[in-house]
Every structure is written in structure tokens, then in C-alpha cells.
Length: 329
Image 1: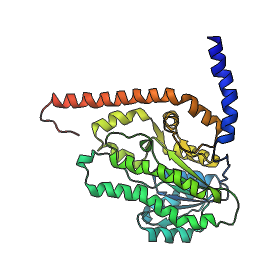
Image 2 (image 1 turned 135 degrees about the vertical axis):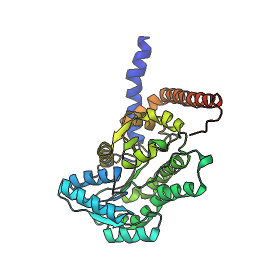
Image 3 (image 1 turned 90 degrees about the vertical axis):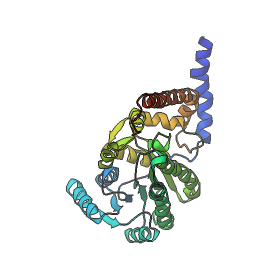
Image 4 (image 1 turned 180 degrees about the vertical axis):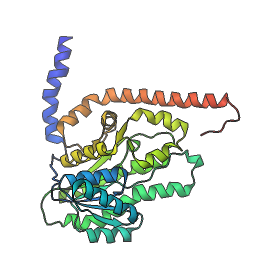
């Protein structure tokens, strides 16, 4: 027993840590925020507005973009009142590349592009119109393609040599599929493929990609969605925790400064990131070590979660069968 303990807790780190220090890529980086141009989409409310407040308070030059000019004006006033900083506002729809390109060109070269825009509707696929599915994918996923394509030329040709960042707000539903989130999860899972491939394309330009995975967050949109969520969605999603928008914003900028590829916002998020690390980039050899040694344990934990979720689904369907005449919510 003593030999096994010594081998696992002493010899394994001594052998593994130097190897991981050598092989982790990309290498560690520090991305400054002070006096950098931070451009935030979906910046007029919710997490986006909290991100804008945080960026302004941290000394960045901030631009925010959303569809509603009225809400943008309100956000601008709110940030000015709280921080004394004047932010630039741009009204554009992320689905329209020409509108996006015009806004980005007017804003000027971007150092930190923070893609926070998104829509969310919890509903079973059978009940969704395909137009709703398409709209979700167009906004959440294609909107990011439009923004990145518009901003990338100037980001690559920026005059300063400091590292730049492209950060996308995904979701814990972009790490694990949840009942009722078919369209939303598909759009957020898509961001991971975009981020992993994009990081390889832009690393030579000292641009570093991050994915932010907030849990349910206290925003006006969540309040409305909770009124319409299927009952099973509420049951399953309740295990993921709940955060305030300003807490998510702080975690996001902490991770962006470190150049982290995965940015988790709470303990459940850290566990999900460890469990789904797969072939993703990892800058920290210490986190790589944790990923390696916890892989098997977390797979067992993941199977336990699935056992619990599918048990809830089976129980729910049995209850429905015992109550004829009731319709699925």
C-alpha cells in the first residue's frame, strides 16, 4: 500500500509534470486589458452589459454592439454613471455581415473581441419550428463567424505587438447536451469547433482564443425563458448552479487575461471543462496534469450524472403515462 501511494503521489507527478510542461501548447500568455480596445457584442444587457462595465472599470477603451439603439443608449448611460467612462455604441445585427463590417470598421482595430450575443429558447425539437432552429444557429453561431471575419484583418495588422484575444461566450449547454436545448446546444457546441480550428489559424498573429462557459445567469432573458421551459429541462438544468452577471464578467476577464482556452465560471463548470477537455488546447501544464489524472474519475462522475438525468426522464414519462389527458409541458 505504501509503495502504491508513493508511486501515485510522488513518482507520477515527478515524471508527468516535466513532460506536460514541455508539450502543452499554446504556451502561457498574459493579455493586458488596460488601454486596449475591447469590442463586446450583445453589450446592451445581461452578461454583455456586465462585461462592458468590467472592461471600462479595468481601464479599457470599450465599444458595445447590439440591435437596439435605445438599449445601447441606456447601457452607455449606465456605464458612464458607474465608471465615468464613455463607451462607443454600434447598432447592428450579427446576422448581417455588411452591418457588422460597417460597425467594426467604424470602431477601429480591436484588441479584445468579446462575442457575447445570443438567443436562447428551451423547447423540444418536435415542438420547434425549423425557422426557430435556423434563427438560433444564425445568431449564436453564424453571428460569430460574421464578427470574426469582419474584425480579423485589422486585428492581424494591429500596430501594437501585444497579444490580442477573441473570446466567445458559450454555455455549459455547449459542453453537455440537455433536454430541451437541442438548437441552443447545437449552436454552442459549434463554437467549440470554431474556436479550436480558429486558434490554430491565428496563433501566428499572437491572437488567442477563449471559450467562456457560464451556467444559468441572472439576466432578464433567463427570467422570461424560465416561464416557458419544459418541466424536464428545469429538473435536469437545476444541477448546474446559478450566477450573477457581474460574477461571470469577472471570471471571463480573469480567464481572458491568462489566455485560457476554456474559461469556467463555477465549480460545476470546472468539472465539466475537465471532463470534456478532449483535444482542446491547454496553456497550463498544472491544469493539464489535473486533466490527465482525473480523466477516469470524471468519466465515472459523468456516467453518474447521465444515470441521474435519464432516471429523471424515465420517471417523468412514467408519471405522464399514469396521468392520461395531461400534455407534455
